[in-house]
Image (cartoon, rainbow, N blue to C red; front, side):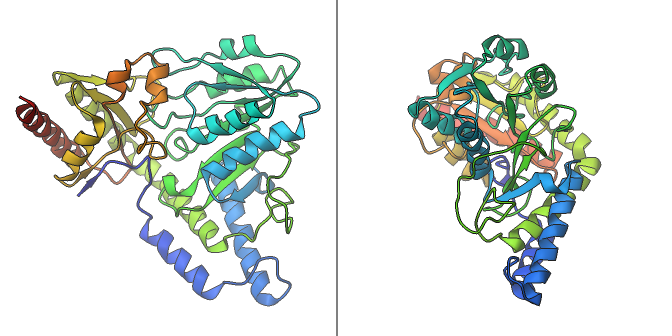
Length: 380
């Protein structure tokens, strides 16, 4: 089996599963309880928070645990909008955001907020200058993803953060679900106020994530209840999953140091070989793109047909974002960068991780060629 769908989800590390089982079996107390078992769970929670903060180069009290990327994005965006609704109701975002950002912002539009959507260039990159032109006295939030989940484009987060320093009342949110562990981002240097991560994208477990909230930033909570997470996110913490997430992030950062060059070599090989094939268009730009995502279209084929044909060979890829892959609509990201709708509907996403190999990449290229030829014969 060749698994090239790591942007949808990753296989948990064995050490991560072992940690989850151990904590679930032996340290299952509620961290809010006063007794000793609760104290043990609370200490594990504190240690995991400190470890994740250290790996992200922030303070431990700036890490808030959630159920994943979708919740973190909702808390960041709605929490900011509701907190500052009396000051302004203008939000700036881009046309290439994940659905958990774009749909959240669409909800706010229905509630009376004014939304400005910045279009990207043909590579999927938005301009900091274009964002600055749209800022008004009513602007309360700018939300821009770090790494695009479909084509892998890296946005100029540092540049955007630098310009927003001149507008200190505007909150800057970054969805870093696809970037963390793959593309460096210094949150302090980039002047980021809120940052989303999700454990299952870096070999942790589904149902766990975190939101970095810069010290001093206030959000309106989405959940009411027991006032956990410094009153920002009520609900009993998933201690076992959080401990497992901390371990997954540490192991991923270690693997980045060891295997990033190999990952870049795999991506380069795939981009070059796909670029040589007739009727294939590669949408991922060669520069300013992450090391693990390649998006391409095959003229004349529906994406889902090709995905299932590769699956028959034991190769797993995806169409668009996994959160949208079962919808018939073309990728909004590809449409936004000017790809014709017909080509956008034939797009395939390959997404890698540090455990993949050049041998797998070579096998994949052979399989693509064979599958294209076989399907062409069937279509004659």
